Image 1 (spheres, rainbow, N blue to C red):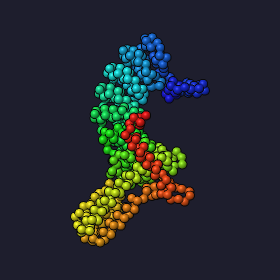
Image 2: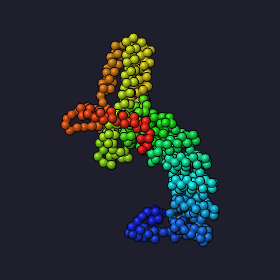
Image 3: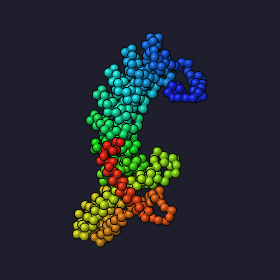
Image 4: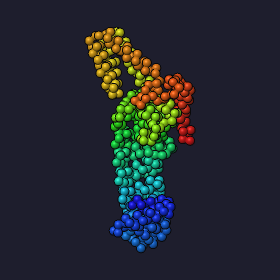
Length: 446
């Protein structure tokens, strides 16, 4: 079948054509139905009535590429041929070898008139191909509001999932459209129709996480505007910062940097033991495609933008911890057991969410001291930890080694802080540009 499809749909040189034809001659099953005159008429875009009159039995025949005449005509946007075949009794729900229907073919080519014709002919709007992809999945992948509206009006469901667990709302993250209005309209339509904004696919990705994984700024913006959660993580324990480190472009990083990411754990280790900053350093130091996998190597500007994003999240987390520690310290000075333990419990729960069991155990040990009124020892512990956090807050993230070493290393012996201090102006410009990206939709769309 693949050889026949190549011969039909691709431009081949004489040698390639000869070899494929030879393969077909050697492999053709005598009992297999080959090209009918009806199929040939559609390929030539001529003489369809005559071909159908001569071979009426071929109207719903699957040829050696797996297509029925109606699917073939739909793929080629032959509206008149479609009308003729349907009026002659063609099955509007007939599937190809791979489960494709005429409606799937029409939506994938974004032929609105063909879609209207098939819907008017009472085709099954929720049929899917062998991968579980429905017409609404395809319309969402195209971010085509008109097609989505037509399908929903005809009874298309937003609930079906394909073999990857993606809903039609997930499919928006695969769209190549950069039209903010279309994506926003598509998102709104799917949500009004009952889509789950926080649905997870087989890898635990919500549409929001998937949009970052595929570096789709406009889709991310549309989902955030619809009030999706930015605090989710997937089945690999990766939060928003992990895919941002591996896939996000400069523009997407700028956008993420102005969102409220308070509560995001910057230290979160995924199933591979990597923090988001580990991912950035690994990708930045990758020497080949094998090392990168499906990630992208960030440019220097993207590295700087991620550092700004990551440090903002880290600093906010540190400031919250410092604030709670200061409250604990104040209560210790007042020798108030209840208040001391209350603020310490907040820190325990925070570290539980972060998965840092060593700190959970440490805080609990301090709690025991407080319960036994060991004021001096508890105060000494809290003051020491507070000093450590204040020191970390004063240290730029690029000066802290990751699992894969430092982000920036220099041959002249200068420290990272001395070298990178010269880029502070650049970071300031990045922030200014970020504001422009977020607030000037017209400029972004251009």
